[in-house]
Length: 285
Image 1 (cartoon, rainbow, N blue to C red):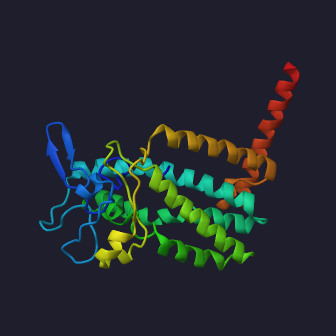
Image 2 (image 1 turned 180 degrees about the vertical axis):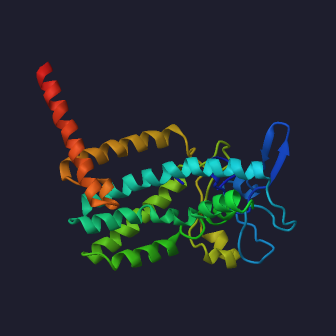
Image 3 (image 1 turned 120 degrees about the vertical axis):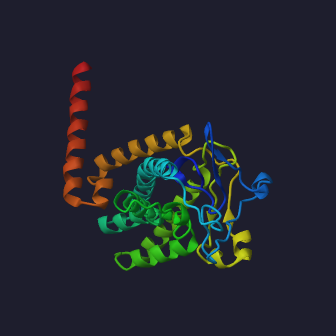
């Protein structure tokens, strides 16, 4: 979940921060730069093309091996399947507790998962690898760069407000859950190695063109826990139970963010199970 930069789990890492090498035991990872060792966030390396940071030094323009790209894609897919779901649970609970109509609830819930739109490069990477026999690296180049920051929050909020009924409330709540997403990524998206932390480039993509902004707008937390750590598991389970309880109480659930009819069927089943449990425990008493 908490998301969600690295060469390990989730395929996330600070852009341009690592090089890969092969050994008899598998890939070796280079720790974050000396700045990270002092508790400071690592900065992205500029590419040979000018302004866009990359996941490797592009000077030699080498592409990763097919095996490396496949392993990386599988890890990104596994992590990507979990993180957006947990983000959605958290943002929907906030929306359910603070909005007074289903449309605004849906919009606020969406604001909590839209930061991960910049991870759709994985789809392009997978397509190129399967159908074009070509290795691309869009996911690791752009995920956590284009949408995981203040500019992304403003853009998403501006769009969602256009469809809201209570625009002022939706604007405030959208910014809130958007930054909740960033906070979750900041505290719980580390790789297995303690130095494999994932910072937030808050003013990206403006930071692509300014070293001063990169230096003064990076969020990093040295106690960041692992993406697949027990903390995220406990939080995810707690959010799921809370969301199901709210769904039974309210008559609508997280499914309604995407389809109202499916939501009605889902909530109906939840209430049937609740009633069955009441009868079962009633007989035991």
